[in-house]
Amino acid sequence: MSTKMVKFVISRQDNPETAPYLEEFEIPHRPNMNVISALMEIRRNPVNAKGEATTPVTWEMGCLEEVCGACSMVINGKPRQSCTALVDQLEQPIRLEPMKTFPVVRDLAIDRSRMFDALKRVKAWIPIDGTYDLGPGPRMPETKRQWAYELSKCMTCGVCLEACPNVNTNSDFIGPAPLSQVRLFNAHPTGEMNKEERLNAIMDDGGLAECGNSQNCVQSCPKGIPLTTSIAALNRDTSFQAFKNFFGSDR
Amino acid sequence: MAGSRDFINRRIHSLLGVIPIGIFLVQHLVVNHFATKDAEAFNKAAHFMESLPFRIFLETFVIYLPILFHAVYGLYITFQAKNNVTRYGYFRNMMFLVQRVTGVITLVFIAWHVWETRVQAALGQEVNFDMMADILSSPFMVVFYLVGVLSAVFHFANGLWSFFVSWGLTVSPRSQKISTYVTMGVFVALAIVSVRTIFAFI
Image (tube, chains in turn red, purple):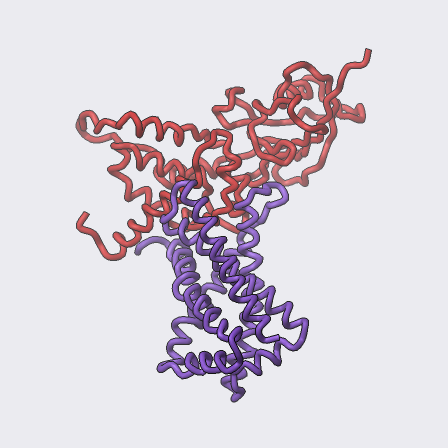
């Protein structure tokens, strides 16, 4: 009996310094398998399509339900999460590559540190600590909460940075994800109190102004976050902020 | 400081493309359109523009310096991008690429156009209908002018779209969509004006 096989072409790299190479794999098909279960099968039996023993493919994963962002990779040319990439819905051979916008650690595993650094840079949090109890903050209207919830779905997966033509080695653009987080925290009634700090942070080099409006981010975001709307809204906010900074303001 | 150098430069780049360069472009195309009437009307209009008071200052601050800044910074922006339309063939991503391509074509065209007309005028040649008719007597130059002028007009129209986004005037997806239709309308309108003018010299 011949079992149906699934073909993979995987871009591999032994360490951050060495050159990437392609390796083909053929693994037995199982119903409802996703890219991660296929990678697990390769890990269980690391033999390539030529029948040679090889090292198991390295990748990252976490939640397995598309909320952590760790398993993002380029699958058949498009960056997405491998946990929700169902093999039966993909054209074969299935081509897996790391998201090369980020430093490759090994095979499909990448280092997304720059995104977390960017979140720190733009102060993507709400400062509530004080030397005494500040009491409850202002209430958030329910309609606004529902709207802000959409922005809070960002899982820092890096797909928008991978799709953006302006995030590359020639530029220091922090990318769409941290910008949209600025809008989220500026929309929060307590976070709004530090609005200016965040706006000034994204008006720094590598910030908001580096966006070239290719709008690939909003097309690629797996969570459907309105990234380009966030960017345009921040463009408006920083227009006012720039004038306030320059001419001064009575608030 | 109102923001970092990048932020200010980008905003100035965006603003200068519309004011004054965009306005100058429209004015230039409209005045040239007199050529569709007859040679005399064109010469009269060109002479009026030539004899504006403080001409060299108007040219320097409305045309030369803004275009120089827009061009130099535009090239910097262009070569910073790593275009990826083959992988992400979305409409806006294609416009992103075309905006950069037409920008570079427009720069080459303007450099040649200024040399051929304004610099020659400074060297004593008279700018009139015959000068343009002479230039456009070569089929190569007709193609060069068509490509150059249409690139400039597209770059302006699509640049107007991104100007509205960059300054935060169009925020919602719907407003950006309507703005796409409006600015492409501007492109078509200006394209008709400029193509009619070019063919008036032939």
